[in-house]
Length: 272
Image (cartoon, rainbow, N blue to C red; front, top):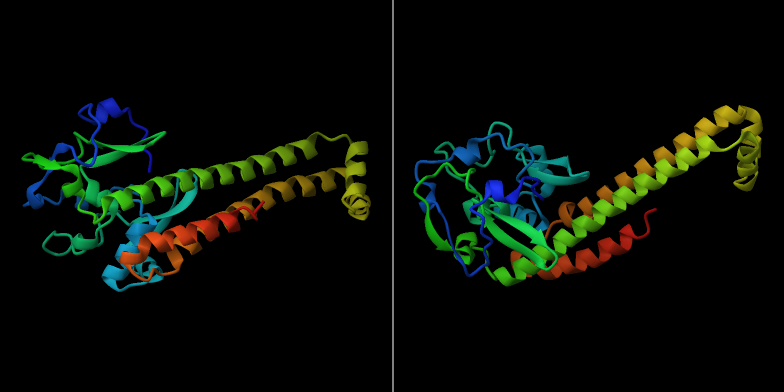
């Protein structure tokens, strides 16, 4: 997810492309597992590619990963997304303090100590200078360090996912704003206008039964509650399309993702 720090304070001041050399190689992190043992909260956010890799690599479904407490769903920047459970360290760190899922570890883990910074055209990589405790890092090509097959396809996926997450956040914000605005509008209506409103929506009997102020409260809460329900539906829809349903193969992931993206966008547009 996005970092809100000043990029100049956390990086070496340079931006890198896939073919650039960067001082990020930790030599296999020999004798060091500090980042994996740290309580990193919700920072290791998992995208659909990560979940595809994790479920196929571990042989566990997404539900299994949740119930064995290695992954959890949290509110991140206002939306629900899965992330590694990192309180007390990563649950995939074995007794020898080595990564038990190294060949199919999440993208953020592959990047580290690199990060991504997004722009209008996509994103660049940057080197985090204060996060990695390993002091003998050497230069390595960014593409080699990340080690994802067909990085060009993966980069296209990351850009699509980033745009989709922005769309989801805006959708949630728009629904929340609409509910709040309608609730505030109801609160400001005069009693006469409120009665006219009740007639228009076919609830004049409720207005007469409850009285104007109780009716006002009911309708005000209705819009807030309705917005909350719609927001939950948006988040559940995203989780269902991209996380809950298993993927067939990592080799066909990008095609599966594109199909799910189209279907999910169509479903989200029906939610108001």
